[in-house]
Length: 267
Image 1 (tube, helix red, strand yellow):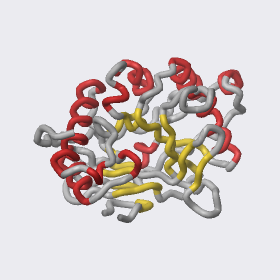
Image 2 (tube, rainbow, N blue to C red; image 1 turned 180 degrees about the horizontal axis):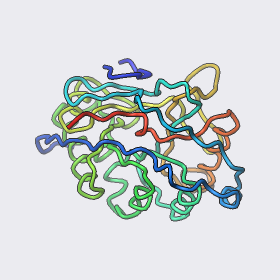
Image 3 (cartoon, one colour; image 1 turned 135 degrees about the horizontal axis):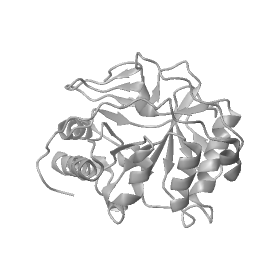
């Protein structure tokens, strides 16, 4: 199954799927003031590069019908990368404060089992302009499930996220990155219009690369998880995220909002 760098449109049991129309991604608010030097220093960081204005002609154009594309990178010449954060198990209040200070755009792929104990935690992050996307109800390996069970996982999370956050997810990320044709069918039937993979995975202090050159490339999607000291050998979510930002800045990139590079289907 191919994972594409897209520059245009490419290609547990339960309820019947019900598709909903994802909302058009909103562009970054250019009127939001850049973080102050003091804000960066508060988190042990130096000021990062500011992301350029996203292109008017979106590199990824999604269709309302037909096959859903799979992508791990956005085709762009801008020196930007995209941070995506999965699951939602760790709910560190300090991370919300960090995001308010630094205004770093993120995309959240939330799994209902991880967030149902505190749906409200993610609302301040959403209010900063960060989008909430689909990551299944229970985080199974999708290739182990029948089509009906895959539909339940995707449709169930789509329904829960739409109810709690007011916007139908446009994107889907399969747990563990594994998917098959039934996953693509389930995603298409349940409402999201693309499957999102990644190029780099965040460890506690470093990035794990897929490419042999072990470098970031323009348009790369980076995978992070909502994790705390128990999973991070004593480190906090904010310390891990600061390490991610240092790696990005060191390699000369800015962080942009993934949804600002996507044209959603026309309604």
